[in-house]
Length: 295
Image (cartoon, rainbow, N blue to C red):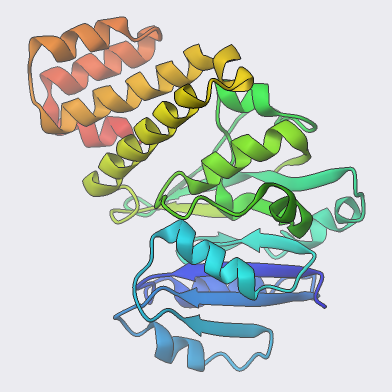
């Protein structure tokens, strides 16, 4: 049995596929398998995979396109590792990504490992560190509520965590990792690595208007579901989730509804002054809104 299963989910990822897989295969840590789950791609993904002559790559092709977190669960079922790492096909790792955590992997006090990441903006090829503060370890639910700082391509999870709290919510296309991490952070210790060793790519496809819409719709559904459960954790921090929902709702309205009085009222309710100013700029100059949403 391999120590680590690296799950790569892909749909029409031919443009980024070689860079992603090479970043895994070139890791200094070698005890891993790659579960490559092709979510019914219609591009050249299959032929590119065939050019990789490495028996650590296990290729699975879905007969039809699935919601992303349904596809992640399908890949998870194929894995044999004690630890599950995730890398989406448009992202990549530094060669020390896995080896840098080797000592921590043997410490069973931690169920989940995560690290800071670099954000790579494809349009202008710029790179920035995702978070500029020290990330917390231990039970981190209260920290995540105030500022969600985990990216799935920088996330490694013990398989036993899935066994105890279940897999991803298969209905989600965007917030499935957020939903899972929030549940897991109540029960398991997280170990943080502040050094960014993974790269998250921002491009037109993953930051499209359609994806922003789905993000808002899924988070709204998640918020309503948590409200119905009358959960003590959620109720304690409800104001922070409500703030996040308002943020997403204003973005949604700016993109779709144009200028109206009800939108101004929502903007004025937003508690952060700097963000309130950004919203007003987006209201007055709608052509600037897409750029503002990426900040």
